[in-house]
Length: 298
Image 1 (cartoon, rainbow, N blue to C red):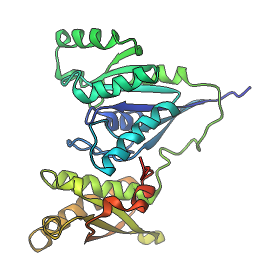
Image 2 (cartoon, helix red, strand yellow; image 1 turned 120 degrees about the horizontal axis):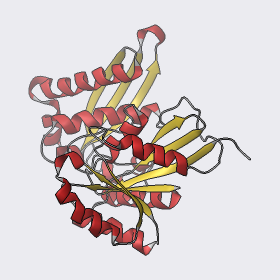
Image 3 (cartoon, helix red, strand yellow; image 1 turned 60 degrees about the horizontal axis):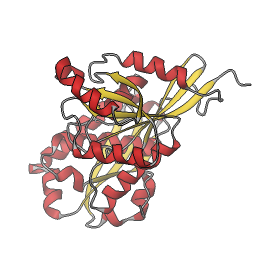
Image 4 (cartoon, rainbow, N blue to C red; image 1 turned 90 degrees about the vertical axis):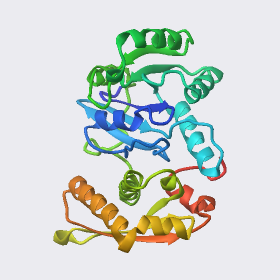
């Protein structure tokens, strides 16, 4: 009989309900990128939490929405797959948006698979208690949820209570990862995600959804720091021009912001080199899907 406890907890929900923010809050470090835009998370990101003799592997998933493109279908498929693999499932709902179309899609999926989940209503700081009560009642009438928690992932309200609850739910198993790790995300992918986050934050409208970032070089130069080279793929020359900006002003801003965050996260000097390339059909490249853990044929 093991004296340790370990399990997987998947965070699922519609786009932009706060899954990445909540996982980062649990871990206490930035593991998953966060932007105000929907559909930011493209693949399953694991964050690792340890308390005493218990390890929880949190799985941040792409938001569920009505998918059309190959990439979108692969993202939604990844989210659905994470449900069956988890010991516990956290179903996040935006307190302000309530039961929207995408939340209903995911709820129907849970009903079809007879999967129970823990209801987590997030962003409670944005609504009154009077507004929350009908939403709680409506969701709990579905019979899907075993427990309900009201939190603000952004502010940290009641997140510790939820975390303590999850610790007690983990099965008796050996740790799956070293106790000092906070994520199993490879450096190549993690660093690419940080730059992709900056692209979301600096570029307007829908352009970030037409962009992919791939780290082609990650080299440790000892006291000189890390050398990172990344390719930013976009679909058209006109999009490349926007990313570069007038006289390279935009790509410089993106690079400086990404470099500053990477230096903070790695606590090392970072030498970051960004190259913008036009690749019209990068969404149809199986190697891209493999690099971020998505099923090309989903």
